[in-house]
Image (cartoon, rainbow, N blue to C red; front, side, top):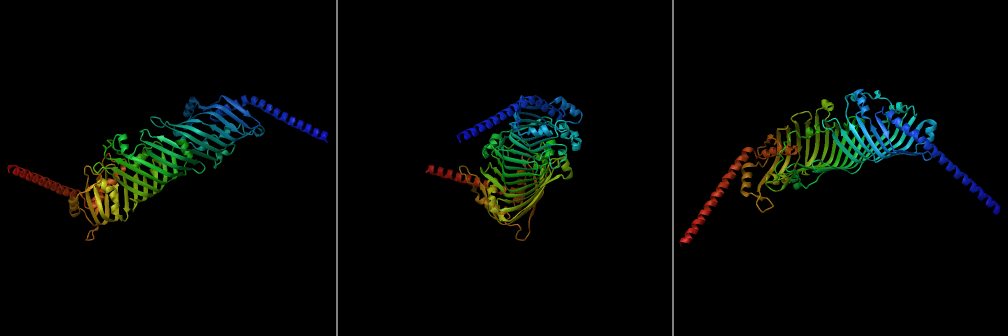
Length: 599
């Protein structure tokens, strides 16, 4: 029995030894063939890159590692470099691409390249191609000859690899932690943008005899996935940080999602203007859910033109603030309306429809007379903005951008407003019309007290309708304000007191002589007032819209220019009477003192 066990043990040792020997032999053989193949593979890689790019690019690398057993390989210190002389020659032949790339990376890894299939069938299949920390520079120059070039005019990539391979397939191409720089050479002075921490995954890249005609593929790929996390950009004026969190894009769906986007001022409200050097609008923007759908990726790659069928923005706020204690900005803001700024965007942009949902919008000013902040809010704003574009081709078909919005003024009164912006108008022409529903007028004190030095003691607002046409210089239109029981108090600022103080007699005069308490009046006549408001050249778009409507509201309640002059005259008379009374009182006091001294 012991002899039998010993024989079995000896047999097992021999089998294990033979297996170990075979494995070592296989490894040595693989290593031998790998070392022999390295020069061949290295030469063919370089030749393949030259042939596939029509000699535009060459590849350089310091070393190559191969393991035929595990099917893994890697290239070290890789550089993909364009040949500028070849590029110039391609331009002269009208065959140059719009984009040129410079790529460097420490390591290019290949996992599972299935050497058996490559040797037997001339089909190279790679499971994973990994670009680790690549540094990419993309230079864009749009050529006219590429605009009219049909895709069929371009040679299939299979034409370039057919003498080496029948098929080249990579299941996954991972580009991790990309440092990307974009140079726009289409401007008089090249513009440079850069981004870091970018991740791109390319799915199922296939080059064979039919893949170029596969309509389900984009650039021979089944899908393109782009991810960017925690991107922060400081604006050149050092006043804002632009933050973007979790951007995800899929080429197969043409959809881009952004978890959150914000424009954050670097200074508090009252210190912002001091840092800027003058009173200027301070923006504070935050959006938590954004998406773009129907993105034309080939158009963006070819021309850096962004086209999307739909954009969605939800759950956020836009706050605008200005500190009027400071000297106003000397820069003339003519030409800075929304549609005009859109035309100044460097790249071409078209979004067919923007959907807004649950966005709070506010405009505030700190007043130098009251030393208080007035704020008007438009809460839970929803609606659509259509034909957002600076594309000449798109504008030739439809030259107007429309905004149809529903909001709640001061969180109370429903406001439906429609804007129409002329995208081609040199004078920035736009129009807006709207209806504000019923609300308690006292909620307006948040803006009338600090900015108008007027307190609404009571007022029942029934409806406010307006129809305004405006441009860079002036706004004209009509406003109808229906209300009941309006009563106001005029306010003043006294030294040493934070709260505003009521002007009792002046308030009486205002209610008795100026203010219309009802519209329609007792006779049932509804007053509709014309508006003619000239824009201050340094005023912003938000300020212009607000001041135009405020003029119409003032006229509707009776505070016309004529009545303002009248009450100012009355106030001047009253002040003179007060001064005269004080003088007489002082004279009487002096006489009493002199009489007492004589006694």
